[in-house]
Image (cartoon, rainbow, N blue to C red):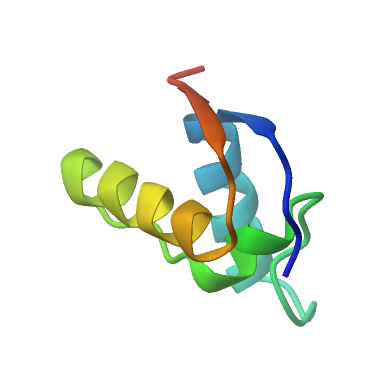
Length: 69
């Protein structure tokens, strides 16, 4: 697990990338942030963000900035 002080996430971009990986032959979630491997986006935006925060907390992320776009 990594310990990063601050991460900035563009939520819609991360969800789009997740969905692309689901329809490809790729394995794993192609991302620059390791903690996203433990996260699965939800159609419900509130649950999606709460799950994202929970995954960041599990990976000792001290500050997470979530942008809509």
